[in-house]
Length: 354
Image (cartoon, rainbow, N blue to C red; front, side, top):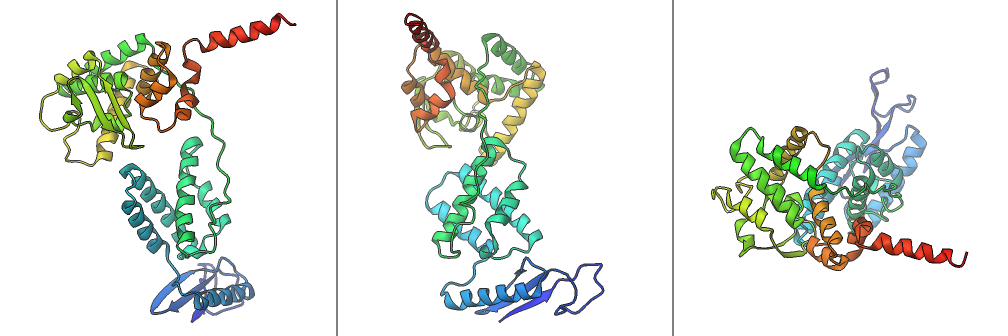
C-alpha cells in the first residue's frame, strides 16, 4: 500500500504527517512485495498527490516488474557495461556520472528510476560544471544509461532523449613550433628530481614522435617497442597503432632505469592515478617553461608535422589510431600540404570570367 505524508519544514508548526492544512512537500511511503520505497511526490497539493499515487499503484500492480531504484539500475547498468567489454576509461566516466546523479537525486527525493522526468534531468544537466565537448559527452552517457533503463522495461520512455546537446565550439588545433619544443625539453631538464627529469624528457619525445595520447604513453609497457617499432591497441578506441619510433625518442627511453615492465609507471597504482600524476607533472613543466599548453598538443604536433611533410590524411588517420578518417579531417584538414594553394588557385580561376 502506498501512503502519503507531509515532510514538514522547520518553520512549519504542524507535526502530524498526514496533515492537509500546511503547504509542506508531500512524500510517499510504499511497500511492495516486501520492499520499501520512499520518495517525493514533487508537489505540495494533496489532491494532485493522491491522483499521482493512484497512478503509481496501478502501474506497480499491473506490471510484472518491481519498481527499480537508482542504485539497483546503476549496479545492473555497470555490470552490463563490464560484460560488454567497455574500456576502463568509459566505465570510469559512467561511474562518475552516476555518482553525481545519486548525489543530485538525494536532495530531490528521487529514489526510483521512474521518478526522473525530462525536466528533472534538465535541472541535473544545468548543475554540471562541464562545458562544450565535455558536456556533450556527459549527456551522451546520461542518455545511454536511461536508454538502458527503458530497454530493460523499468521506465516507459527515455526521459533524457529529449534533452538537446550543447553547442560545441571545437578549440583550434595548436601544434608546438620547433622553438617551443626546445623550450619544453629544456624545462624537462630543470625538474627538481633528476630521475623524474629523465622520464619526463623521454615521455615528451615519445608523445611528440608517435602521437600517443598521454594515457597510452605514460602506461606504455616496454614490450610494446620491439626493434624500434611501437605496436599497441589504444585504450580509448581499441584501434591498433603500429609505427617506427624516432631514434631520438628511443635514445631517451633507453636512459630510463629498468625497474618495472613499464617506462613511466610502477604498475602498482591504478591507470587513472598514473595519468593524473603525469598530467600534474606536465602542468608544472609548462609553468617552468613559461608557456601555455597541454600534453595533447604533442599529439597535434605529430599529426601536423606528418601532413605538412606530404603524408596523406588517410595514413595520418591510421597512425593516430582514429576509427574514422572524418575525425582526422575534422581537426587537421587545414594543415594538409598544398590545400590552401589549391583553394587559392580555384579562387583565381574565377577572376578570368569576372
